[in-house]
Image (cartoon, rainbow, N blue to C red; front, side, top):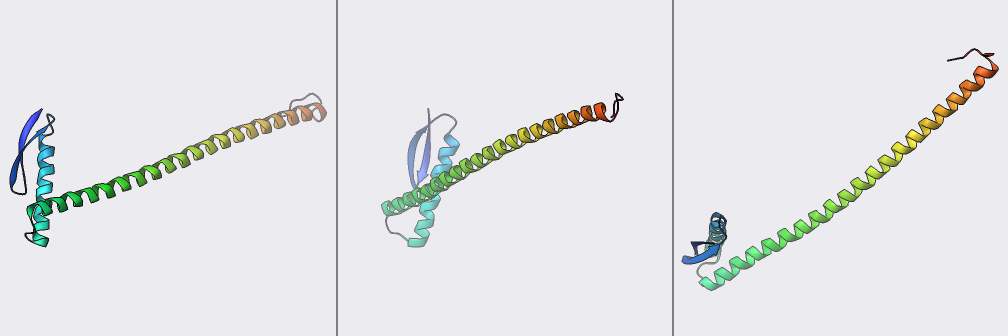
Length: 127
């Protein structure tokens, strides 16, 4: 477990994180600091706590939107997989049907050749 200092809204906080996650935690804190700065620029000095809550709500709103988009994309992906599977099943069925039709045609040709050999050829093989 690592410990790092982050700055949020001008205040330093000592935070614990998993080893190797230090740079990620610093980026998260920097993002929050930038959001608070942007809000301060838009609304002025409306109180630190209010700015922090607004930044947290903005982040939560973005996270909620992202999760909804992810769920929609997962649903779309599932539908596409279902369509692909159905198409694959149809392709296999078509392949089986074509093979059966070719086999049936080959059998008919073979029978026709045998009949012709017996009736027309007088014992001489045709084809």
